[in-house]
Image (cartoon, rainbow, N blue to C red; front, top):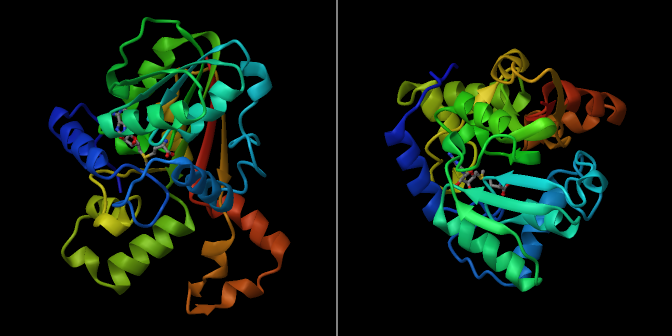
Length: 285
Ligand SMILES: C[S@@+](CC[C@H](N)C(=O)[O-])C[C@H]1O[C@@H](n2cnc3c(N)ncnc32)[C@H](O)[C@@H]1O
């Protein structure tokens, strides 16, 4: 599967429309959004449960982000969804700017911050065309978003441009050589369920990843480590790690026949770092 990277105003418009209707809440039923304390804390609980590699509790992402180093620093949080990452940065004492392509996400993020009397600049912006001067930020986070943009390369060039020299960025993207992509999506949905007769490989990827309960989103790309290195090639230092929970391994060959549970835990842990779904990327300008 190889998506032709490139500027596409039309596809970006469709991506925007879709995410505006279906804000990413980590909850199965997106339709009833009541942006109160319980709604936001439920999202946090899901993040703690589904991404134990990223944190043990609050602050979220504390295993992969050094919040201590961000106190008083300028942070850009790209594609914030419901604002959970923004909340962590503000609480750590950073001066935070948060952007998302959709008004719905900006509203939800503002509501989340207002609930806790926290403040940040939150605005609609396209990561492929950031409305900030060069060399502005000390740290940029792009969590679970670069793979939903038609021009991922341009968005990464924008991160480079707005980072100060020596500034750092982290991104979460999806790993192509994962059990999730090759076994559960390509083999399971595409071949066993025959979806590849009626869908392209890219459509399969869009349909069975984020928003699967809403018939899939408009664009989800999976990348190899080699492709990631190429996309971030202007950064002199890059570190790529693979993470996941053990569930996809436990559920081999099928969740109703979970023989994978019999694999010894140390081997399962090792496997998650080889064929997990999540790529965590750290770069420095
Ligand atoms: C899977 S959600 C992740 C949201 C958030 N990071 C989280 O983990 O909850 C993807 C987000 O990317 C945003 N997005 C997609 N394309 C974008 C773009 N070109 N610029 C900024 N945000 C974008 C969507 O609006 C959506 O909120």
